[in-house]
Image (cartoon, rainbow, N blue to C red; front, top):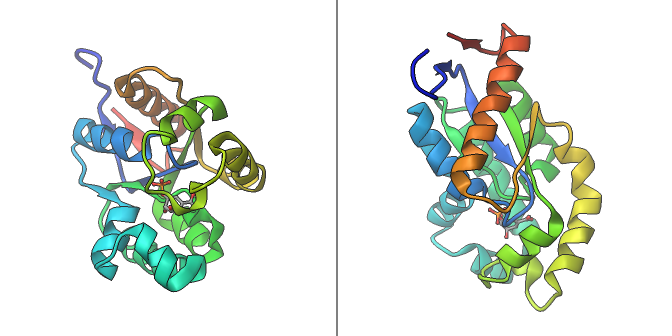
Length: 189
Ligand code: S3P
């Protein structure tokens, strides 16, 4: 192996899961570039399919309508060729999506301190589940319900408040360890 780059042979999609604001999209884009894989952002794909923003989908169709569309888009992406996929924070609430993720992807939970996430999400007002709420309180409520589900991910990576490049390194390290222990799920060379 030369330099700091591990040579990872990625046999299937890397699905990033975790709360909104943890950096799935930004980190995912960089991870995809490092691994030479295509990247897709679940929310962007839903917006393209619906021709509306996520916020507008929530307003016009409600959260249920959004979740139905999200499940359809997740199915299409998860059944497609390997990629790095940044999932919306609530995508894993759908049992079919979870089952598809198990079959078609290696899932990675990006976990961070809730205070770090709360300070990040304050910069944007695009997330319907946080609108008009105290971010830390709202995120804590979501964490209570979702952390037991995120915890079922194949790989768990703690991301701090540092540079996104550090998170990418930590994910690659986590994947390398995971694949080394699971020869059927992937290989390191
Ligand atoms: C949601 C997270 C958002 C988006 C929608 C709902 C959630 O995606 O799908 O606002 O339920 O956690 P990000 O996690 O990419 O922000």
